Length: 303
Image 1 (cartoon, helix red, strand yellow):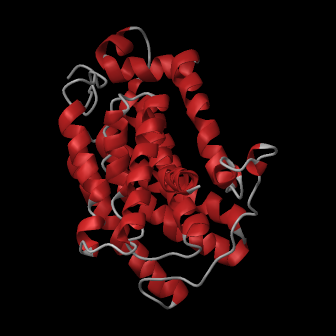
Image 2: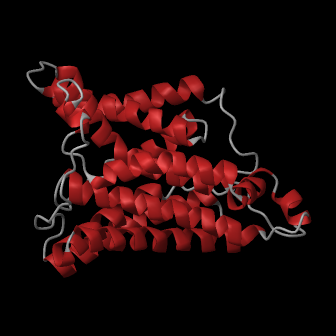
């Protein structure tokens, strides 16, 4: 039973990483590195909480997705149109997101770091599976966002591998000059990849605020946007790979909460487990993966 509860906890904690990592696949497959995922999750968490507080969880999710897309649009304009260094742009967006959300929190909630409690979605029990003794904790009381995240894994794989859009997206991420020579318009495809990553990162932030904690708390993303980037590399830029990587990071976070209970080890060291795991995983696999050839490389026609 303890293992079932830990797996259920790992699934719920891995969902925000999974959503942001799926978004990173779209962005990096188009050739744009999105270091700003963390900031897009931050604005998603705030506007998700605000929308849910004002109108309910559904509008909250829509506002979070729009907020993430807005920040992603800024990243795309800076990186694709003006060919600014993508890492520098992402870092700047992360800083901007923290400042904007604090200002908005003070303006709208009259509190700098938290919001009031917000409404959540009605939990869903998966028929049959939720009634089984060992699987019940995993498939009972699921958030609709958790189910959506799992459905998005095969959908993302289908879009990337089986559709014309996915083929063109991969083309501009592997060889933008070759794609341009064949008649593809590189900038709009890269814009689309970055916007999709922002929308999914915003959804990840909304999940944290609405479903995970039931309120907005400053710093609640706790670096999950960066962990999502690590999951993308660990998963070799494939949806199935990032799903297993996200569940691994979710399990590490779940384990850290379990170990804290009654542990003689200081709390701060236990909380380091997911981040130490991130460094360990990347140091072990980074040489064995194959990123998109033109990821992080600006493209200019005739340049």
